Structure formats: C-alpha cells, structure tokens
Amino acid sequence: MSTAIAFDTLAYAKKLRAAGVPETQAEVHAEAMAELVEDRLATKLDIELVRRDMKEMEMRLKHDLTLRLGGMMAVAVGIVAALVKLL
Picture 1: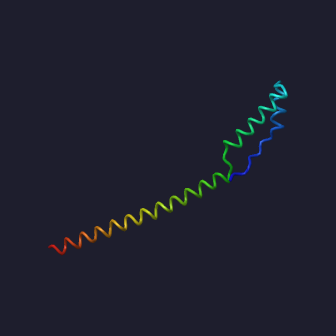
Picture 2: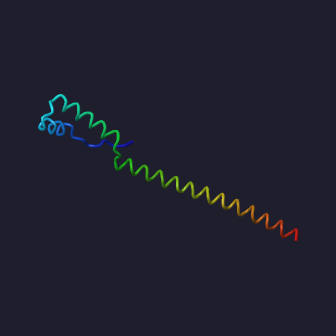
C-alpha cells in the first residue's frame, strides 16, 4: 500500500519540448516515465513496511531457535540422566 510518488509530467514534457522533442512525443515519454517511476521506486512507507516485516521475521526466528535449543537441551539432560543411572 504505497503512496504515490510525485512526478511532474508537465514540467518533464516542457523540458523535453524545450530540448527539441516534438510535443506528442514529449507527452508520451513523460507519461511512460511517470509509470516507470511509480511502478519501480519504493516510497518511505514501502521501506518502513519491509523493515517491520523483517523485524517480525527476526523475532519469529529467535523464538523458533529458542524452542529448538530448549528441546535439544531437554533431550541431552535426559540422556545424561539415563547414563548416570546405568553407572
């Protein structure tokens, strides 16, 4: 849910026309550039959402690793206790 990126197509088309590009070509080029900018560039909101998602994934990973390590330790303690009984 990104917000729109401001791209002034009119100003861009004017610059192209001033450089000698025909008006219709300048307008089409400006519209194409606006679509490219809006489709390909990330906004600050996009970046913040990615950061938030990464933090959530990191927290889930830490939680999963903690559970796995705890389970492995419990098994290890059980094995050691069984070995001690055998001695």
